[in-house]
Image (tube, rainbow, N blue to C red; front, side):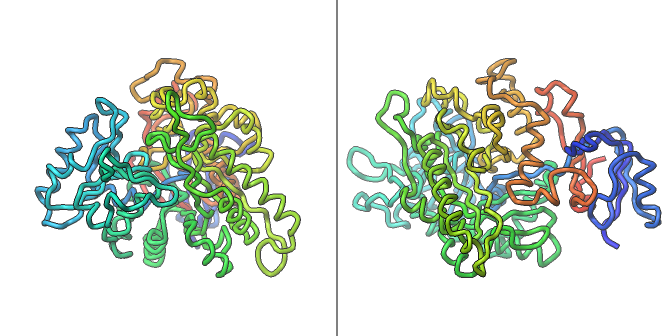
Amino acid sequence: MGNDLILFNGNIHTMDQRAPMVSAVAVRDGRIAFAGSEEGARAALAERRGAPALDLGGRCVVPGLTDAHLHFRWYAESLRAVDVETPSLAESLVRVGERAGRGEPGEWITGTGWNHNVWEGGAFPTRAHLDRISPRNPVALKAKSGHAMWVNSLALAQAGITGTVPDPDGGRIVRGGDGDPTGILLENAMDLVQAVIPKPAPHELAGMMRDAQEAAHRAGLTGIHDFDGALAFQAFRLLEERGELSLRVEKGIPHELLSEAIRLGLRTGFGGELLRLGAVKMFADGALGSLTAWMLSPYEGTRNTGIATLAEETLRDDVYRANAAGLACAIHAIGDAACRAVLDAFARAGAETLETAGTVGTGGTAGPRPRNRIEHAQLLHPDDLARLARLGVVASMQPIHATSDMHIAERHWGPRCAGAYAWNSLLAAGTTLAFGSDCPVETLDPLAGIHAASTRRRADGSPGPKGWRPAQRIGVEQAVAAYTLGAAFAAGREGDLGALAPGKLADLTVLGSDIFSIDPHAIRETKAEATIVGGRIVYRAF
């Protein structure tokens, strides 16, 4: 006998068209046995005497919410790092200085969240700022976007970065008029410093991730699609072996490990009910905040078209190699040029794997076609909007990026913003949306994402009742579907997840308000009050 549970007296939105609203659910051995009335739920478990029952008190319930794009190691480490997401440069420096004052000489100080776009003047900070408040400790601070790093002179020295070191492929060392590094590293140049920062042991990271998992459950999350590296996978495995893993994890495969994954015969979907291999994560460009997203035309008022972080030939070849081996691809693409290059690569890979279908997967037999994804897809050229649906490509997007970025998007993309964060247009074209947070770039809270998708407004109500570029708003049910049905489809798990229907895994999120009936702007204040994974209550606040 596994996890049995009766949930009754609820306002349960199943996302199953056959029975979209029910008042009770019965769970047998961790799966939905019945969805309907309380009487029917109790009857479904009549032979299981003593099955626990939970009175929902009229609360709203949805299928377990899944964050389809985040960085769990980065988030776990950020809980112990310096938070430099501040409204001013001065406040960031105060926080770093306080940590430096407590640290041992030579100890690395790391942090995340700075955003020069919201600081007065909008200019990048420099190593000189950090040198003044941390002369004894190397400092490495990731930008909010994750696509820039701000370091001091000690960090540059430890990484061997001098004025004569060339820019790495797909990266840029920002330099002053004298040719020396300013302390800002963009895209692949960040790897030069990242390589010399001491890494936690797998068991240490597992401890951090256990704390982060608790935060995820408090936010109402039952599953995540994680895109951090191999060390995160080792930590997840440790948690699973100890019986401490309670999130369903689709673990992305780093691009640099593609050849090894193919040699081992690994395929997307390999694993168990809690921990499975996901898609191969690649990067086609940078980000809007650092002006490194790869654009078809320059940013407004500049000659800059961003950075292509992967050669197009490599992109095409590696997508084909992955798909032919049964590995899906999840490719970061923010600018319209990057999105087009990724769609071109998917189109070519699809055509070529169909021509050689007998070699797809292993053993010379064709397997199911991998579900490729574009991660972010923040700006699509109008000519490319319909291509995702035609190619069967999932749009893995993060709604809160739109409201967070709206001012800098208008500043740097101008009229092109009509096609930015185009959820409504993509849905109208038949594209599957899978929503996430990109945490720790943005908050882990999926309700914040549902709010952003359905209002295109910030928490303070700006830019007004209609929201930013309101033509791209979507309905609350469509937004919830992207965190449930869409996330399940993206992972190839629609048979098990995404809806509350008999036979599916019993993952549920209980909410404090009925987000389908309240003013959508009030969704931002709604909290998860219980989280259930496989019939087991992993978080409860009532």
